[in-house]
Image (cartoon, rainbow, N blue to C red; front, side, top):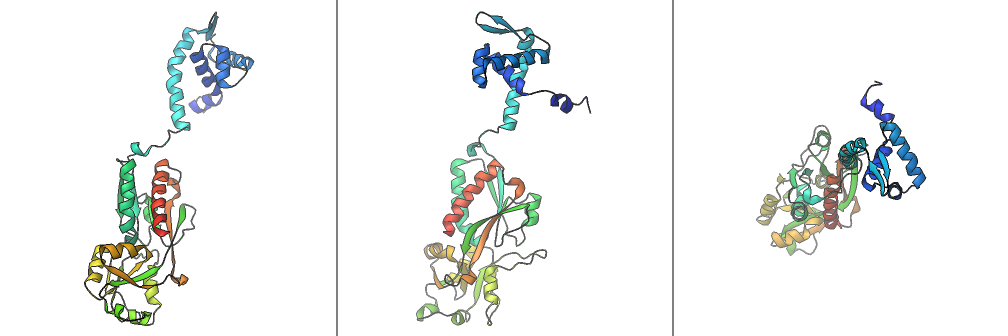
Length: 314
């Protein structure tokens, strides 16, 4: 152990190597002292230590300052790349998204992905042309995938308290029931839950997990009704749900995020809102594994996502 590199380096003040590099650049003790923000006498003491360390005079005094000995000139060729490597190790280069070629794997509920992904990818392509994004199927239990590194970020309905995960609150959504513009319910004066339940429902699908019991908040809402009946269709494909709701009397359980999009793209209108029933509001969290929390690329990408998500949820 006493002959190991670590042991030998532990006995050396590496700050002396920095001072030697400055002396080699400046060829003048006074100017080197100014660069290091120390007194001239302190720099002279440092030079004495360097001479002792390398068993060489290192510099010869001249009329213009100091001139390196052959030993110092030899060291000069070695020190510059060494200090450059140490600088990259200890003071990483400022992150530049344009040079980033990372791949990010996301898990986002379909009803949010429909709005988030076009905006997010638009921003990514502007500033980081070599970054790629993969959207994975939503899992009710994303944590094994986060553990394995197969997911970088997962949007979830619950905060995870385990210290190896970092959960960031995004905001909340609330359910809204949508129907096609010509739906018979629009002919009545008041729409009640009872009148809604006389029609078939369709809704988003969330994959269940045997290891983490989870039910989509929208399905929980239906279960509260004594007249509960299973949705005739649950799908993870937004367009399929829009096509079914737009061509039938089936009611689509969506959220407050969908209002503008549904009206403009599919002619679906909100017919019943739970905005004032806070017990049905759902918090959303963005979850990542702790190991990536301080990674520069992940921090940049997360910032992009948060800006877009919070704009949607505001």
